Image (tube, rainbow, N blue to C red; front, side):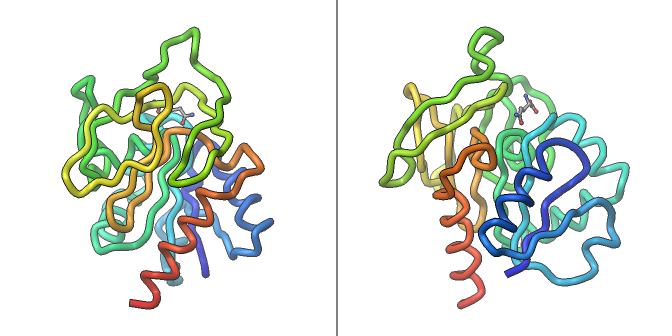
Length: 191
Ligand code: GLN
């Protein structure tokens, strides 16, 4: 299994460290040349979604990655990565990939609660979630499965091969989110 991590800005190194720790081959996606060898999954990390969106366009990565996501490459978007996948942003700003049928609110917890850690149910297990100036999901389309809520807000969703998480799984020792993502990749490969 070979996973590419978008590495133009944000918390990409932390994702790569976890992947390596879990014995998965990981590589950085910095420019179009990095897309030449085949890979099985894509991670869009946390960071600043507006900056990542601009760099995706400037570096010529937007079109090829949108194409891959659209054709079913399994993708995990965390925090800013969730925003990159969302079809709608509640402030009305333009979406980035817009491949996932969700509406997100950016910096949704306000300044005071900008960063916090909590424990909440993810699928059928309690896990530690670390939020950093996170978005949450305000609306989901009919094909979207809700995987986690915290404080009555939707914080993890899945739509077919796309997984979007408002918190930072790369910053805790719980690997539940990654294991789900690996299963999605394996199931796709088996098809
Ligand atoms: N606040 C960031 C944004 O709106 C997301 C924060 C994060 O990824 N930790 O893009």
